[in-house]
Amino acid sequence: MTSTHSDPYHIFIQHDSLVPQRSTGGEEPHHCAFEANDTGCMTFVLGNQTFDKVATGRQSGALDHGKLALFRGELASFRFLKQLFASFAGSDPIEQKYLFPVKNVLSQIPLWQLSEIDGPGFGCKVDYDIRSSLGGKDITIWKGSDSGASEASDPLVRLLCVAPGTICWRDFDHPTHDEAGDDNSWFRCTMSAGTLQWIWDAFDHRTPGYAVITDEHEAVIVDSVDLLDSTLYVSCVRHTLNSQFSLRCIVGASIHYSLVSQCNYKLAEIATPDIKELLNAGFSTWTGLNAGSEEPLLAHSYDLQVNASLAVHVDAFSKDTPFQFEFHARLEKPPQQTLDILRAGKEEWQRPRDNGAEGILNAARRRLVPGTELPGIPVVHFIVSERVWPPEQRSDRLEVNIPLDDEEKADGSTHPFSRVFMGCLELRPTSDPMSWKRSKKLCLKLFDESLLPASFSSPDRPLEPSMRMMCHEHAVYKRLEYLQGSLIPHEYGFHKFQRPGYMPVYGFLMEAIEGTPLNISSPKWSDVSQYPLIRGLRHALRTFLYGGVKQLDWHPGQIIICPQDRATTTEPDDTDFSFVLVDFAFVELRLGKADGSGVRFRQSPENLEWMLHATSSIRREIMDSVWFPEDDYEA
Image 1 (cartoon, rainbow, N blue to C red):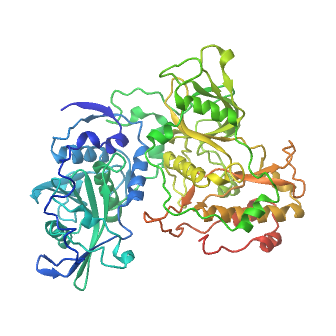
Image 2: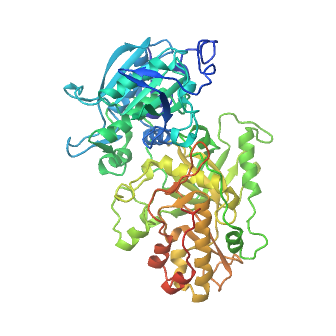
Image 3: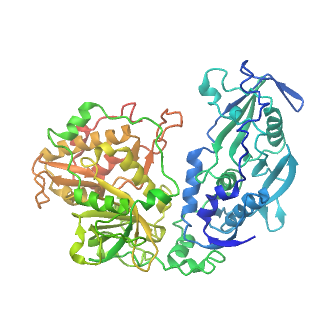
């Protein structure tokens, strides 16, 4: 057995090298009775009870793709923390490949914070027991302690690993019983009898948080079993295993969510001083998690000045991001009346894209620079021309508390969750500066945990991992692509940026908007100007909600007022202006379900109306006369 340096995130997405080759006999053996049974259901005897029907279902506690993606996002916060991990192959025992690495990581990283009942501390300990069942291994996982496993309590997870061809996975691959409306959600295959007996036994005595059944190629996660009359409903989700939805990720997520729901654990907020101090102080302070790693730190490295140069690893975010939000619900555009109001009679609503920036990025994507190839050397750079956020006077180390009054805290605009710069892209095809090409001015927004405010704390909005903030931005720009160049800026890709000698960070490029934030221009608004502003913002809000995007932290700095003539003056001229919306790190996304149906927003009501009234010179009577209630599609 060998060891390799890796980090918690990449350990959890490892898949292909651990899986034995699938046999050539297909997913199901020849004696599978799924297709042969056209009656729609079978009778099963489980324990001392006979069930006329057994059906699949899915409840709110199911570990679907969304929850697994969020778990991976939490792990991404620790992607720079290196440790020696044992390397395993497909022929190694199940517990060594999937349980031991998970157990090791979860006991050390501060993903959980003990409640006051158990005392302070981070991480969790788990213990396990291994038995034989259905020709495979049946592993029971408990919350552990210094004195051993807590086997008197309900287990966190039951894990059953069997040989391929043992389970009819199609019996677990149906719509939920409350959506199906017919009999095609019933179990139909005789091969399922042993599996159902195992599920029944797992939930009949001591109820686990989750039961996972797998053959290392497919997996089913069961979260509950319910009995109604003579029908048994099994709430579960089937996953085809790959690097994004690996078995290690499923086992870790099952333990993770069981700890949160069953035990006195809560998610540790990454903004708490204990964790934030570690991330900003340096990774060498993480005992056992940074063996042999001497990577440079980020704390001061991205307080960039004018003419600073960052190498651009084009499209790297999309290639190695831990997860991206995927919309299943069909894109709904607002009524034509809303689009007409936003267009405000302008024939050319969309601003043109920067062909120079597109050409530079495309040259890098082709990995062929005209005249010369420089393999392995980033030939695209971002040259800083201006620092936008946080302002220069707040460029000190982020652990320093910045005194804020209540009004500043309320609008949320004073906390530097990212770094924002103006600058341009530069293509360097050769070492001769005469051959270099530059784009027009662009805006760069960087995200990383080391750039987050250590002093920030809010029970209403716990600080999310920076990777998830980046994914929110990515999802909004892709979802509302038809609004780029009008209501939102053009985006020019999601990349990785690196200052020489420092670790890389993720960020994205967007159009540089020439305008003034609402909080600066608002004292100059006349009554005549307020009517089209409020009307336009209300219809912009409707457009976002129709598209499945709800902004959760509205503040005046997100609304950029642009004079139509692009003049340098910041004073609006009656109705001769437009606006652009930016900053989508804190949003709720109405992703919809895998079958394409939509879901309602879950977060608190929209607060754009309150923000306009509380933080600007907008008159209440004008607001009341223009603002209209949500329709059904916005909810």
